[in-house]
Amino acid sequence: MKTLQAITLGCSKNTVDTEHLLSQVGEEYTILPEDGGEEADVVLLNTCGFILDAKEESVNAVLAAVKRKNEGKVGKVFVMGCLSQRYMSQMPALIPEVDGWFGARDVAPVVEALGCTPSAASARYRTDDHAYAYLKISEGCDRRCAYCAIPLIRGAHRSVPEEDLVKEARQLAAAGVKELILIAQDTTYYGLDLYRRRTLSRLIDKLSEIDGIEWIRIHYSYPADFPEDVLDQLAFNPKVCKYLDIPLQHISDKVLSKMRRHVDGAWTRELVRKLRERVPGVVLRTTMIVGHPGEGPKEYEELLDFVREARFERLGAFEYSREEGTYGAVNYRDRVPKEEKHRRLEALMEIQSGISLAFNRSRIGSEERVLVDDYSDGVLVCRSMYESPDVDGEVLVKPADGLSVAPESLRGRFIDVKITGAGEYDLIGEPIK
Image (cartoon, rainbow, N blue to C red; front, side):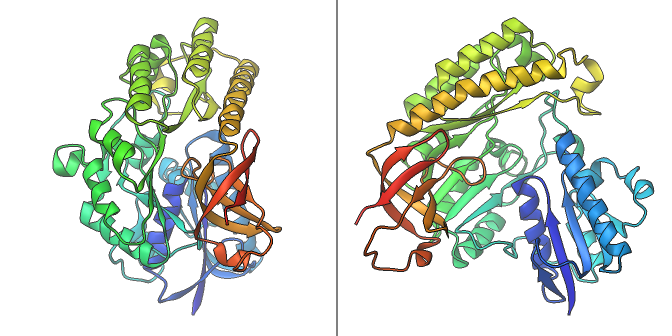
């Protein structure tokens, strides 16, 4: 059989696209590991084109694959995803050694270029053996935030039908997946195009009925028009983690207006208050942007005050970067110097590190149920419902003496632990016998 090496760059949404694609070619190709050997009949790169660093990483990966091709180690190089979608008119001339350029939604054309027949997209070829999996519930975005290029790249919002998602989730559960992480450009927008109303809560009900699925985690929730019934899922559905990823981006009315977020500071504060009140114990993850047009010293200080006040358990932040084609790039001047953006980012994250540390320390002495992701260097690498993979810390557990099973056999299983120590990111736990 011919060999195919798929290299996925960027976000978890790309991972899902790659796995859907590989499920359609697996009978014709031997799928090589992403970090496997140098030789392959075909190398397929699923690229990211969102921000400058991601674009540079993707271009470098393409050039590395072309180098292998020129050395005779690779037969063909195909490139798909956000980078090629965004620069389709330029990339073929810049890197002519690539055998095929495909857009972000071009799964079927890639399958055909590989000499295979496109089939149902709900099947997945797992590229890892984790007990968690991302479930992409929609594609594209109808929002037009000033700083964001995603609608330009991925197009309009398009929900995946409920029956397809349930089928896909059942297949994942049968393969040993215990945690579903719901992802999209905006998960709370789910269903509007298909069912004429937001139906994320109804989808969660259906996913909750699947045997084997024990945790459901919600990522990428847009704050405007947040659906009330999802709050009930967070509060009362035992399978839904009390964890919500809700990117807020800023608190200043001036900056939010320039960002075209369709909310203001008062509305944002009220949403955070409601989340805390309606879902006791909820862990909130958010992201902020510093240095966006309109953010002067006053607006930046307002952001710092809000972070101190809201005490988000998890927070990531980014420096504003001008992305060509976006509303902000066309209509605003980027007035904040790069050095000042960096200073603002560091000061914000210093405040957040203290908040994260205090939250983690508050859990010392508690007993928590954790999912074992790995066993490495004599330590069980775990997560509770309050940690999402890749973006949050971990619960590190040293197996107790006299453990009745081999520690490596616990991978992918739930265990109960007592939290005994905490740092800014990771926690220390010990098994409860």
